[in-house]
Image 1 (cartoon, rainbow, N blue to C red):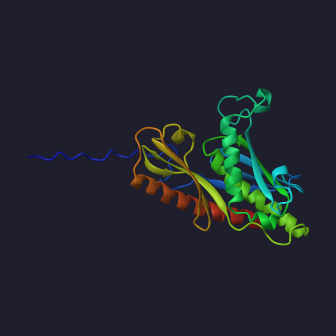
Image 2 (cartoon, rainbow, N blue to C red):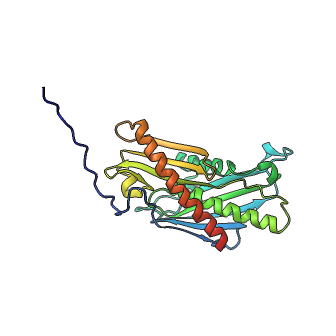
Image 3 (spheres, rainbow, N blue to C red):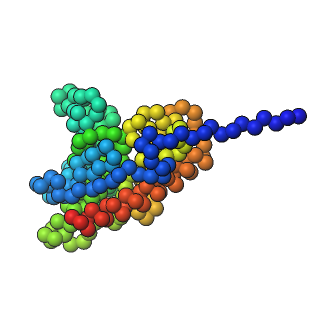
Length: 251
């Protein structure tokens, strides 16, 4: 009885020519928004996001007299951040479900590394505005927003508004996916739009998992494939944590 051997599908190169575990070129430029308490433009390949932190000496009504601070986020895309013009959400009179979901994700991610008791009853809002989109805008927003938040806290410490640093760790995010090139790190739009599965990983420098958003676009993926994606995400966020610290040191 003969045995049929099925050869694995040959992998094709990534459109960008990057290795499977290679991030796009990353830069974090601090101090872009001169009036914000902290700001950062993050560039990951063709994706560029302006992240600005604003501090208010108050908290939402539901948190008054709690002794806890609040960290939240708003997210938006400029009309020509993508290939075709999108309407401003203000002109439509409401935010899309996607926008609301992303800004809640950014807020949750940052609160995961903030001791809100040490922050006290003040609010720090991170505005994340996408200037150019080429995939991974929510991940870039989280990574850049942490830098903007850190700069705002540094100012509060320098002016004696805060006595203790409430930031207890780093948080960064990166996308991974299953494509014709196999399991790959940091998908750009060309890869994301045709991926068999894609996932966003929000991780801390201490090894914690804040959130994982993973979806099969075609066939379900396996535990082994998910482990591949997780390993790639660990590799990517390790590099992003180093880039965050370098940006703070340079700023």
